[in-house]
Length: 512
Ligand code: MSP
Image (cartoon, rainbow, N blue to C red):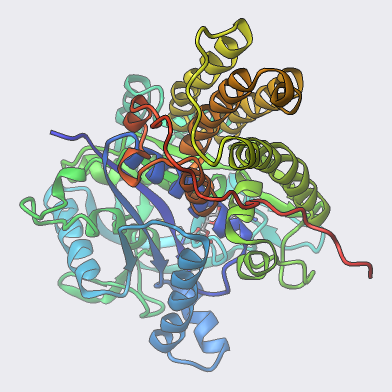
């Protein structure tokens, strides 16, 4: 029996075009999904769009479109973003789909049955931009004299009939759950914030609205639509066939990891497990939050005009380069800054110089000096051979540990340590000199390098699927031996390697 693994991205609001902030969470989730598949898991990887709520309704009205037509357009853009980035999602969910409305109604009914939903009256502060209710003591006044929530989003006073979820009754059970599952929230800074929010005491949560209609109808009370976050979070259940316990994907619950931005941790780490526990369902195993990208030191915003669209970057640099840069540049969980200079420098130094040159110089020497045939391993191995081969052999385990804790930057750092060691090995061994003095040893050195390139390319597949596929072609790894278990299968000595071609070109900025 293979182990199953369920990973999700947030579902994206369809009130604007995708930017690198969205791309980032999707790429991170994709790296997890691809790694788990390579590591022998049966993976279900979900992404999609969050289409209801007052914010989307307002954006549609502002654009002069009915909400369905409006969301159809943007949902397509997010689908294209995923395709453009090479995201390997198994499903794409839209919250306006009938299957989702069915799942929302089923979950709602469960919460009514368990006594966790009651009808009342909401009076309080609501931030449209966050689609979130805030307590009085969470508000501040900004420089323009406007009352804002913790994220800086303006709030307005809302008063309307509303159903409530009895969140106040779940505080202690949530704290017990966090205690029993210390790895539930990552990173630690987020966990601390969640704990202090819950310890501060929870208010019941308004989970329906009557002042607009763009949402999932509340069962048996069509004057209400469900609060968009209850609707949105349920997407993770919809896609595995909830409420049908016999659905083909039902076994994927509970989700192994929800990848989210740090701004939406409260919804995933407080409300979501409370809803699930109240409905008698297990909570997800982990919620992992990424930090926030700025652009040249500033917040990305339409009004500043500095929004970076993934499609433009892919067009100019190629998707593997964009994926690599975003995963490499900032430690997951921290905030980071995008700059064009930073991107180009990483591509030129780490991809073109370090990895590209390693492959190009090793493989072109095999092509030129070994008739393109893979030479035998050294016999006996020298201390230098052994040190490098051992360092490479440790890499899959290091990458596993890094990806399982979403420390992608550490996994890449480990890989680059091996790449730099391999480049140093080439320089010391100087196979070009051995060509004149000891052809057998020259072959042995090149073979060590081919093995190391193979290991590096194998573990980097989740980050850069296209380029690593070409690299694995060039070292002659058959398609069925490209997973982690396949590394145990040695390369075939004497096999003919295809003519090597440069994989990571240097990027030269055109003079302005
Ligand atoms: N619809 C909700 C999520 C519902 S999940 C059940 C939502 N959508 S969003 O489109 O506003 O944001 C989606 C994700 O993109 C969030 O995880 C958010 O953190 C991330 N990012 C949006 N801008 C970002 C940056 N500038 N940098 C990094 N991530 C950013 O929230």
